[in-house]
Amino acid sequence: MDTRIAVIAIIVEDRSKSGELNRLLHEYGEYIVGRMGVPYRPKGVSVISVILDAPQEKISALSGKLGMLEGITSKTVYSKMPEKEL
Image (cartoon, rainbow, N blue to C red; front, side, top):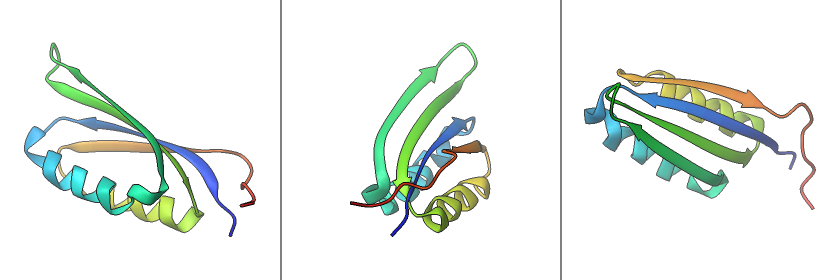
Protein backbone atom coordinates (compact mmCIF):
# COMPACT_ATOMS: atom_id res chain seq x y z
CA MET A 1 0.00 0.00 0.00
CA ASP A 2 1.32 3.43 -0.92
CA THR A 3 1.85 5.86 1.92
CA ARG A 4 2.79 9.52 2.10
CA ILE A 5 4.78 11.54 4.56
CA ALA A 6 2.86 14.48 5.97
CA VAL A 7 3.15 17.01 8.75
CA ILE A 8 0.08 18.41 10.48
CA ALA A 9 0.63 21.73 12.24
CA ILE A 10 -1.91 22.28 15.01
CA ILE A 11 -2.58 25.40 17.08
CA VAL A 12 -4.68 24.81 20.19
CA GLU A 13 -6.40 28.00 21.31
CA ASP A 14 -9.02 26.32 23.52
CA ARG A 15 -7.30 23.94 25.95
CA SER A 16 -10.65 22.38 26.89
CA LYS A 17 -10.52 20.65 23.49
CA SER A 18 -7.22 18.90 24.29
CA GLY A 19 -8.99 15.69 25.27
CA GLU A 20 -10.77 15.45 21.91
CA LEU A 21 -7.54 16.28 20.10
CA ASN A 22 -5.58 13.60 21.97
CA ARG A 23 -8.34 11.05 21.36
CA LEU A 24 -8.08 11.65 17.61
CA LEU A 25 -4.29 11.45 17.64
CA HIS A 26 -4.50 8.19 19.61
CA GLU A 27 -6.99 6.82 17.07
CA TYR A 28 -4.43 7.41 14.29
CA GLY A 29 -1.43 6.51 16.45
CA GLU A 30 -0.26 3.64 14.25
CA TYR A 31 0.56 6.19 11.52
CA ILE A 32 2.28 8.78 13.73
CA VAL A 33 6.06 8.85 13.33
CA GLY A 34 6.60 11.65 15.83
CA ARG A 35 4.91 14.45 17.69
CA MET A 36 6.17 17.63 19.31
CA GLY A 37 4.11 20.05 21.35
CA VAL A 38 5.18 23.41 22.69
CA PRO A 39 3.05 25.58 24.98
CA TYR A 40 3.41 29.26 24.09
CA ARG A 41 2.24 30.88 27.30
CA PRO A 42 2.61 34.55 26.26
CA LYS A 43 -0.14 33.99 23.67
CA GLY A 44 -2.07 31.35 25.61
CA VAL A 45 -1.81 28.70 22.89
CA SER A 46 -0.08 25.38 22.30
CA VAL A 47 1.59 24.51 19.00
CA ILE A 48 1.83 20.84 18.00
CA SER A 49 3.47 19.25 14.98
CA VAL A 50 2.58 15.67 14.05
CA ILE A 51 4.55 13.68 11.47
CA LEU A 52 2.65 10.90 9.71
CA ASP A 53 3.52 8.08 7.33
CA ALA A 54 0.12 6.90 6.17
CA PRO A 55 -2.13 6.26 3.19
CA GLN A 56 -3.51 9.46 1.70
CA GLU A 57 -7.05 8.71 2.85
CA LYS A 58 -5.97 8.27 6.49
CA ILE A 59 -4.12 11.59 6.49
CA SER A 60 -7.09 13.33 4.90
CA ALA A 61 -9.50 11.76 7.38
CA LEU A 62 -7.47 12.89 10.40
CA SER A 63 -6.97 16.35 8.92
CA GLY A 64 -10.70 16.70 8.30
CA LYS A 65 -11.61 15.60 11.82
CA LEU A 66 -9.12 18.05 13.31
CA GLY A 67 -10.60 20.82 11.18
CA MET A 68 -14.01 20.26 12.76
CA LEU A 69 -12.78 20.86 16.32
CA GLU A 70 -13.69 24.31 17.66
CA GLY A 71 -10.74 26.21 19.13
CA ILE A 72 -8.21 24.24 17.11
CA THR A 73 -6.60 25.27 13.82
CA SER A 74 -4.65 22.85 11.66
CA LYS A 75 -2.91 22.70 8.30
CA THR A 76 -1.41 19.70 6.56
CA VAL A 77 1.68 19.61 4.35
CA TYR A 78 2.29 16.54 2.17
CA SER A 79 5.39 15.07 0.61
CA LYS A 80 5.41 15.36 -3.16
CA MET A 81 5.68 11.66 -3.89
CA PRO A 82 3.92 8.64 -2.38
CA GLU A 83 6.26 6.28 -0.55
CA LYS A 84 6.28 2.62 -1.51
CA GLU A 85 5.97 0.25 1.43
CA LEU A 86 8.78 -2.30 1.53
